[in-house]
Length: 410
Image (cartoon, rainbow, N blue to C red; front, side, top):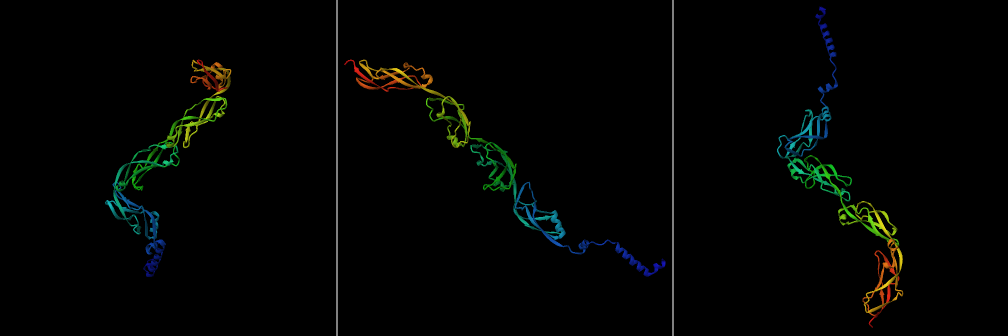
């Protein structure tokens, strides 16, 4: 062994074998590692649309306008870094206004937390912003609703808003422009009873443009009182037709004498009554009828819609009362009168009236006479006059008497 170690060729061969073994013991290199170390990276780019913009400023005391909500950002650099940034989006586009002054000014949009191997291009990269003092002011809320949504025959009272005041926060210029603070109640159906609903508060300028302000609370409760337009009027009875022969309508009474009507206010002012119609041509005796209450045009509703009418009648009978003596009245003492016609100086009456009154009639119930107080000597045709019980109608068989007046002193 010592002799071999002393041989220079043995030493050279042994060194070569050790070198080969050492080379084989090292792990093989991957292609990527070789690329990273020895080959330049492949470059690419991507444009991300509508990337959100953050703003840093004193939100307690300032209002900033003019900052876009989003921008387009283009990333350039090694493909792997571009793909990673596009997928994770763990970087930020922002505007730093922490030391800003009140007024209008240009500011630059910046990017942070982005890999230093990437280059970012923003569009836009600068914007003009307006910085204003933030103020809070209290305003009264007015309720608004579509009056065409009120059912016909109903009307709306004064709306009630709870709470009726809200606090509005925004830029001083916007607060100064506030003209209307409204809570609009939207209803799809016609309203005929009181409605209470939540409504969003809207803040508008005089041109009805919506203002970018904060409202607390943002919704309020709106109540629209709805009532019916009603009026109480009497129910009138209208007789239609003529009663049958021998029937007299003594009375018609209704179980309900007034009705409540609903309709537009102008129609109610003009309406003094409603009516029921009784066809007396079909009445032959005492009866009770169910009748509809009739309303005029424009009235929407009437209560009650039906009433009961009690009809009381008198049945008429005819009777001839004969042998009623014809008497003379008003003849002066110095005159004498002779009844030439009727010869027997008697009158007959055809009497019509209620059965109870007609059945017991006698001649002495009537007074039949001629009045001669204004006449002197001569022959006359004088009207026959009749007096008798009330509620009766009569017709004499003669309307005039022939009288001769003479002077006793002649």
